[in-house]
Amino acid sequence: MQPTLKSIVSRFKNKKIAVWGDLILDEYVYTSAGRVSREAPVLVTEFEAHEYLLGGAGNVVMNLLTLGALPLPVGLIGKDAAGATVRELLTRNGIRTDHLIKIGNFRTPLKSRVLAGGDHTKKQQILRIDTLPPDPVSAGAYRKLVKTLLAVMRDCDMLIISDYLGKTVLPGIFKTIKEEFPDKISALDSRSHLLDFSGVNLATPNEPEFKNIFPQRKFSSDDDFIKAGSELLEKLAVDGIVLKRGQKGMLVFSRGQKTVALDIFGTAQIVDVTGAGDTVLAVLGLGLAAGASLLEAARLANTAGGIVVMHEGAYPVGRQELLDALP
Image (cartoon, rainbow, N blue to C red; front, side, top):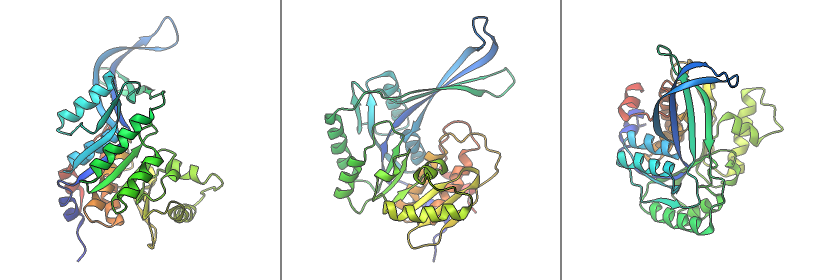
C-alpha cells in the first residue's frame, strides 16, 4: 500500500538533519516614502523599523524546524554583528549553534533590503545591498569545518547542502563526507557549482542555473528540458533532480523512471519568491529522510513552495499548514 502524502509528513517529526551551508542574515529596512532629494535625483525615505530573518541555509534550518524536524546547522560565521545576530536568531528558536565556526577574518553574509511605501500602501523593495565575505578562508578553518561535519553526520538522518557561494561549501569537503558516509542521503542546492558535486543523491537547480549548464542548447520546448535533465542525471551520477521552473512548476527526474511534470500549487499571482527554493530543498530532504519516493517528496515540496510564495520575505512553512493544504 502506497503511503499518503499526509502520512509522510507525520514522519517528519524529530528527523535529525544536518544543514551545511551559507548562513545568511536577511535585513529588512522599512521606510516611508517622502520626497525627491534636492541634492540629487534620488528618493528620500524616512526610517521606520528594522527586521532580521535567517536566509540561505538559515532559512532551510527554519523550514525544517517548523516542519517538526531537528535541524543541526553547520557553517561559518564571522566575529561580527551579523554573525552575532544569526546566532541569536537560532538560539531564540531553540536551535543548536555549537556547530557554527566563528572566524575572525570572515564576514557573515548579509542581504539588506530597503523597502518604502506610503502610510496606506504596501511597502515595496527599492534597493538590496549584499555584503559578502571577501577574504579567503584559512585552511585551518576548513579543517575545523570538516571535523565538525564528520562529527555531526554520525548522528543524522541525512545531509542538506545549501551553497549560496558564501565560501562555506566546497566540493572537496563534500567528497570527504561522501567517502566517510557513503550511505547517507544528501540533497544539494548550489548556485552555479552544481557540476562540482558528483555523487550527491539529489540536486535542485532552478531554470536559469539549469540552462547555464547547457549553454549550447536553445530550450525551445519541454522536450529540450527533459533530454538535458536525463543527461545531467548521468553527468552528476545522482539518483534524482528536481528542476524548479517558477510559475511552470517542476520537472522531476528519477534514475530509471519517466520524467514527471508538476504544475504549480495554488495561484500564479505570486507575492514574493524569496526563500521558496530553501523551502523546496528542506521539504525534499525531509521527504527522502522520511522514506518517501522522490516523486512523493517533490509533490510535498511543490505544495510547500506554493504556500511560501504567497507570503512576503523568507517564510518558513508550518507542518500543520502543509498538512492542511494536502488532499
